[in-house]
Length: 253
Image (cartoon, rainbow, N blue to C red; front, side):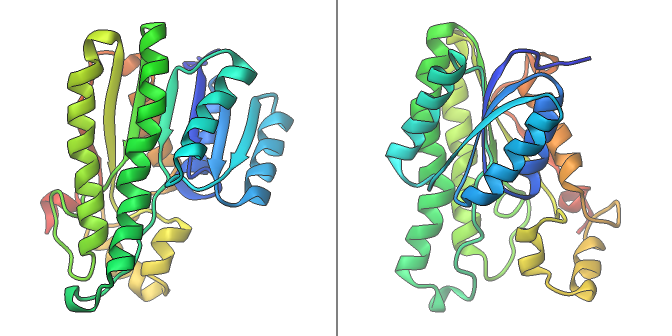
């Protein structure tokens, strides 16, 4: 069943990892996509793959911390496909890592700009357009880090992603009676390029896997399936949720 047939969706962070897997999955379920990320070449390849499989997609490269880019993604969805029903605001960055006393102000500010301000800018343009149509679903990618688990050396990342959860709850309350649902997806360790940048060897990845109750890392496709649930009508009574899809890391250690 094509659960997103003719729905119009924006997906950011679509050049790799969870965002790329979500784009392929949403398109397979009938969504018309505008995909975004910084890497134009990777987006072009993704769109070629989707269209080769019979889907509909276009791309726009840019920086999610740029307000003009956030607006341009929504404009592209409206101009190309006639509206906006779904936004999977998945783009994010680990940012500057390390002990608190070594973290630079520039590193802190850039991490918040991408992960938290980027989420705010996206929603600021997406939610009103959806509200006019009387329906819509916004999903942010957050994380268990800073929510259920504290990890050393990740203060900027944790703070920015925890802020996304506060934003999610506020917007869910603000837009619920206008037909717009707002939720957050909280992945655990996932085998993505970002994940491999932290766990850069097979030994480190095996160690991270063992932090999870399931004893393994997630695939991007597993997280994409969770995002599909949240944006679909199957989750029609779900809003303001912080959906853990973390392989049990939050309850295991």
